[in-house]
Image (tube, rainbow, N blue to C red):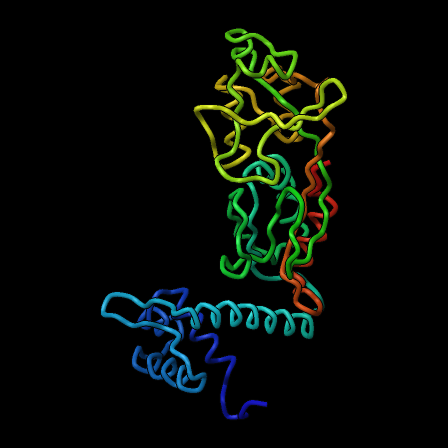
Length: 301
């Protein structure tokens, strides 16, 4: 057990402020201390830990690898302390910030429409949402919850399933008017097949014809990094796109996109999960509140 005269939580809070505010002076103003007092506190912390946390220069502070690791753990510890105090004082009311990382497709078509209800149910919760299709390191990106599609790789992450969606090939009527509608795998050789600019679990379109499944490669002059961008390319008539059905449902109903080659669908479905770092105990109420909400109102199926 550490010495009782060391205010470790106070040191953590000052260190986190220095990092998030970008220097000793702004952290000093926020904490109503002097910059020299902040500098001495950080130096004492580094001496006690036996590691340099910050590289100092006249213009900026830069986290060392040890500083990055300490910062990530410190922010979580401080958040857990706040949550413990709230539970003791006002019950398990969800209060605080939740950092969410999700694809643009999921955000636009599922999360954003449901957010007003969540914000009414949990007025004490604030959300910080980042959109990307890339797989992120939850700790490095300071992310509480990430929503991801596809099979989960073995890791320390915990997942809650948010349903699954069919994948459908679509094209804009303007594209089909120019290039014709394909009816077989062979016909696809004459068409732009839009795809992603990063490696996926299956790099191509699994299609079943004549009792056999073939993976048709993506061949297009345009590739893109996210599913919502792929949808917009299809809407613009750039080419054919194979995309999650829930993202184009409204476009198909409105006639903006037309589903094609449905008879060749191999039946592949894409599963969505909300993933988070397992903490070996009860989750903070703010994170649990959003996870429970997504499991009920954030499903893609």
